[in-house]
Image 1 (cartoon, rainbow, N blue to C red):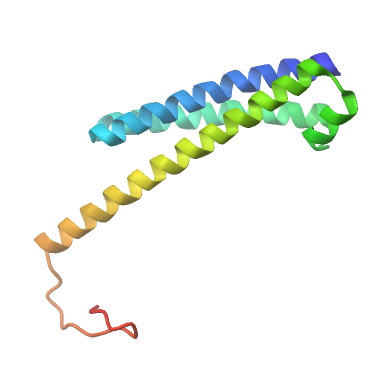
Image 2 (cartoon, rainbow, N blue to C red):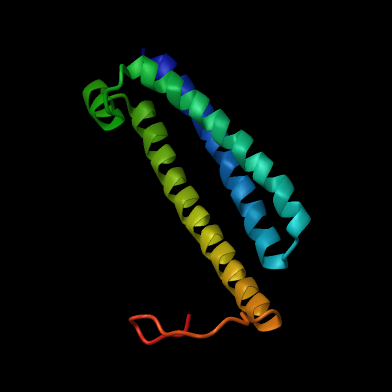
Length: 135
């Protein structure tokens, strides 16, 4: 079981590395404002996520749904512990990159919305909402 679990974790690590690489590419395209390249990288990110999910399902079948930290503590295998720690660190990096990319996307959308409102203002009568802002 330990060798199978190690093999699945190493495969999942490779898939997570590919996902992080794709997220880094997305970050570059966001900062350079390359819209058409963003569309291509979105498909790559989706494929990487499917690959990670496939290995996650394999790992859960091996562990019967039991938590990985419990299994690592029970088995006391040094290689398994190192691989698990590497996966956790990589997942933190992926989460940070994903959050950064989402923030950049939101900022870009907010700016685009403001520019569209300036170029094409609402012609209807203005009213105030409960917070004192115009609608």
